[in-house]
Image: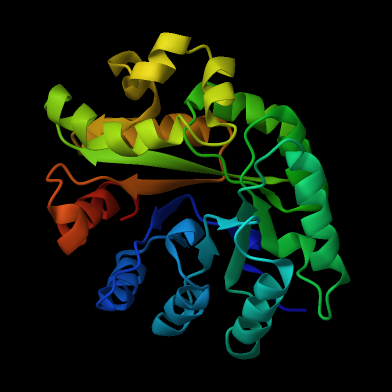
Amino acid sequence: MTQHALDEIGPIGVTLDVRADGGHLDDAALLEDLGYSTLWIAGGQLATLDPLRDVVRATRTVPVGSAIIPAQVYPPQDVVALRRDVEATDPGRLITGLGGAHGARPLRTMNAYLDALDAADPPVPVGSRMLSALGPRMLELSRDRAAGAVPLLVTPEYTAQARQVLGAGAKLVIMEYVVLEEDPQRARAAAREPISFLTQVGGYPQNLRRMGFTDEDVATTSDRMLDALVAWGDVDAVAARVRRHLDAGADQVVLVVQPTDPDAAEHEAPHETWRALADALIR
């Protein structure tokens, strides 16, 4: 039986942005050489799922995960076709992260989606898929019908609570915004835009309130909330935040690096930040 990437997941992953010029394929090779355990690609940014396959084939052995493939954008047959394609050449390396089941009945939507993956020929195995869970019922679904959960925008205290819901057997992968910047105002400014967007999406507002943030915190993306959600500061400060998640029960922390220069986000990858964090957290 093929060993799957989630069987022995390493502690430090990183997100990779897809670039129109194809530079992300070189970035993927660099991140693999730096020793990151898993490369995660946001499915919501993709016009097709092909870049997930392309990143697998541009690297040697590093697992590649989708974080996440939104269920309301891609039908199950697209996910089945992607997995079939990748498994033919690189078995065991694709982690199928699923989410985006927004609306009135997200649990029913996700259950139906998973039913379709189970019924496919070949199926997408439970052990190769993760769910973007936040609330306790979706965490339970991640435990029961997937290999585990991939939460975003959470605190280390949440991580400990999620581990209790998931139990010891399921995987818990925490997506953590990272800003390698010691100035508080610059660091918060770098994280505020993406987090402000998420505070208006799906279950994020509810989960933020569940973690103890006020309506005002959520509406204004307050400094207090940003400081609780974002690993910012020098390398040692970022490493300390990552350790808190790992100590609280995370199997892996995924670094979602935010540039302090807004123009750099569109034109270049944060190579030096990736190297500095790899030196501190991996090597």
